[in-house]
Image (spheres, rainbow, N blue to C red):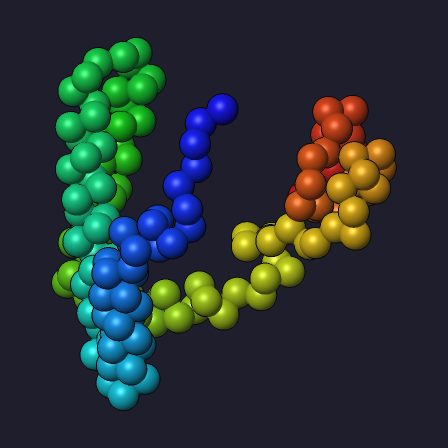
Amino acid sequence: MATERPVIEVAKRFTGWNILAAVLFILLGLFAIIEPARAVGAFARLLAWLLIFGGVAHLIASLKGGSAKQLLFQVLSAIAFVLGGLYILMHPQLAINTLTALLAVPSKGRWFRLPEPCSSKSACRNSCSPRPCCCYCPPRCWASRRW
């Protein structure tokens, strides 16, 4: 049996970075409350650059080889990511409006359905209810599920 470190030692090791991250997030949150337009614009630019770097990563991943289907998917994904990132950089206001519209989609809709909490795991395992559940669903129920 491995010896466990006391909780205090582990807390001391991570405390510095955690406090720094917490202060940084608090300052960024205050900035977002004070200047929401700039914060949303910065988020759109961040998203654009993440899409561009993701596209480059897909292009690099396509060089490792694989089947023609994988190669085609990786290259098409790379092109879509880079074009999406460039479009957001060129049209930031439209990107902000689109991101706002995506947030307005109701959570009970078809796109962003979150699992509803279960009363108990055993009830979920033993039943084939049509509603999504946060627990394990037996394979015999998969065909009857309506997501």
